[in-house]
Structures are given as C-alpha cells and as structure tokens.
Image (cartoon, rainbow, N blue to C red; front, side, top):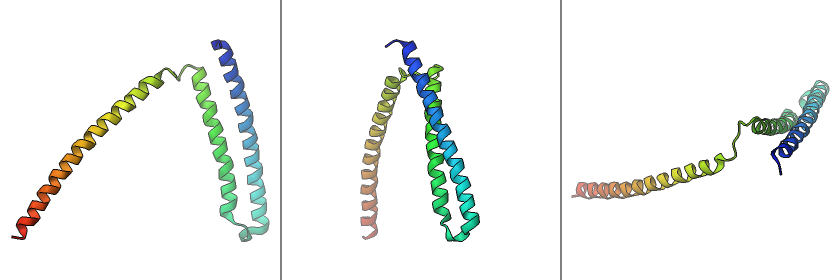
Length: 126
C-alpha cells in the first residue's frame, strides 16, 4: 500500500476519533448537568462518589481518544518513526542483560555478607 493511501486512512481515522471525542465531551457535559440537577434536587440522598465516578469514566474515555488523536497526528507529521522499534527493543534487551549481570553480582555479594555475618555471630557466642 502506498504512503499516500496510508496517510489518507490515518487522516480519516483521526477525523473519526475527533467525532468520537466530541460525542464523549457532549455526553460528559450532559452527565455533569444531570448530576448537578439531581444533586440540587435530592442532595445527600445521592451517592456523590457514584456521580463523580460516572463523570470520571467519561473523562477517561475522552483522554484515551485524545491520546490516540495526538499519536496519529504526530505520526502523520513525521514525529514518530516506527523504524526505531528494533533499536529501542535492542536497547531494552541490553539493559535487561546488564541488570541480570548486576543481580548475579549482588547475589554473590549477599552470600558473602551473610557468611561474614554468621561468622560474627559465632564469634560473639564464644
């Protein structure tokens, strides 16, 4: 598939996501208005945590969609290079290898320290 076609698909997906975000924002606005009205009418009879959680869930969806929009936009703008995947994966592997070597050294030092501690205890008992 050519780059232009891929970019067009990405642009369409961004537009779809923007529409989805707008729907969530409208839903959040309506939920806040409803919750405010319900609170004004029923007050402490309502569970405030439940009202806030419902709003928070919608806001989480808005944030997720916004993040997807931003990521795809950055990709279209050339700010994200998927070719870096292999390089980053190798760097992570190298770091994990270094951590393993350090863990092995740490374990050997811990054993030696435990051995010395035991000798100290034995000497104190004499």
